[in-house]
Length: 183
Image (cartoon, rainbow, N blue to C red; front, side, top):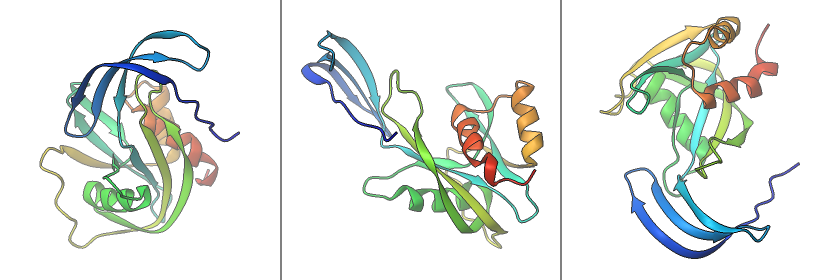
């Protein structure tokens, strides 16, 4: 069933902070069921993610340092959607920057909310196939600390089950891509 937005009525903005990539707002709201209360929300422009697959069926992931987690997480390449940018363009740029690969075949897998209890961020997930390594990959962003990792779908599934730190957006996208991956 398609998502049907039901906006709350904003009665009062209590505070607002604009950060580098997202904003944080506290407001008094009236929910669609009539309940009035104070809520906080992270407003995020959204992200695009790729499940990249090499011609021999390996998944291309990144092990990336994340300051909020205070450690390295295993993730599919992803990036923030820039203002007025199509998520498909975002991920084409990000996959090259983060992995050094280019995809010649794209399929939209779907979209999902990342953490709807406190954020409006939506992740747009894509399957990236027919990959080729770039002869001269672009420079990674200055704040990125990334290592490229190749795994079979079975190895990734086992890593998830073994408790390796894989982020939620990557697990969700892996589930969406599973039927397109070779067994």
